[in-house]
Amino acid sequence: MTGREDGRIRHPAWVRATHWINAAAFVALAVSGTAILLALPRLFWGETGALDAPAWIALPLPVNLEQTGWGRNIHFLAAWIFVLNGLLYLAWSLATRHLSRRLLPDADQVRPAHIAGTVREHLHLRGPGPTQTRYNVLQKLAYLAVVLVLSPLMLLTGLTMSPGVTTAIPELFDLFGGRQSARTLHFLCASLLVAFLAVHVWQVLANGPAALMRGMTIGRRAPAAEPARRHEREAKR
Image (spheres, one colour):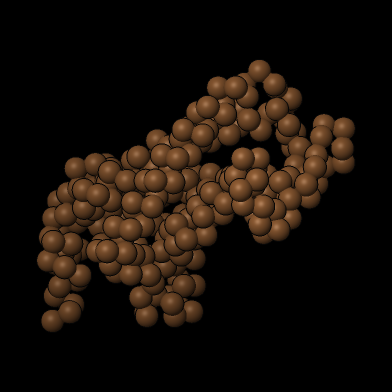
């Protein structure tokens, strides 16, 4: 841990900036994606699908064809903001070793007893509070899944749904088994990201929203975090 991280800075400026850009882009993607989905709220596997065809998953949503136009425009714009911002975050994380230092689980965190204790805390709706100075193992695994698995899958499945892209890169069809398969996987990945967001917001609300929002806006730790950091330093002596 660097001296800067051990001091008053909770999140560096580039983390805060990419976080809020990502948040805004994701909300736009979720809203516009729902508008697009309502044109055909049925999910298929393979290459083709239609309203009167047997669906792999039939969502209990009304058909609405009037929202597709603006939905697609907003979705495509927000998608590229999300992708470019994500690439910037990933590149900066690798360059500064943020990914390895903050998001990779430590040796003590992957012990079964530690993982079980963290799971119990979450099941009892208990969190570490705003004085926590590092992510717990479940948080780290969730962030890694979002950054390295779900987000790339969202990008690739989204590109597979584009006729222009698949004309240039037809191998995407082989990767996902067809355009409708890609659409179904796109929906499932989006649902997991929405679930991640819901848990993320709940954890903020349950563990001192004022202090955590302070850390993700102005970047400074709340004064209440100082005793926890002092206790950690004394324990290391």
